[in-house]
Image 1 (tube, one colour):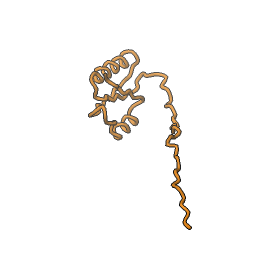
Image 2: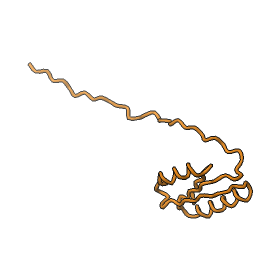
Image 3: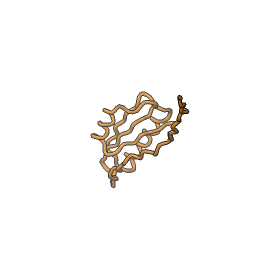
Length: 100
């Protein structure tokens, strides 16, 4: 005599818990005098103009000495890792513009 066993279905919960990366903030700069700022333009409309104005204000009001400028080829692509490393090596802080 043959006994037939029905199909069994295993339910799996597809949800996951968020993975929250650890992050440490960079030390805050107390004085911008004679500091070097890096500026990354995301290549959207008006990003260049925004960064130019910010650079001028930082020079005039806060004594920033050097502005290093980089324009990404496209807003949808990340900045080249070599550019990011160069900015980290050469600049005291970096500003990224997100145009409109």
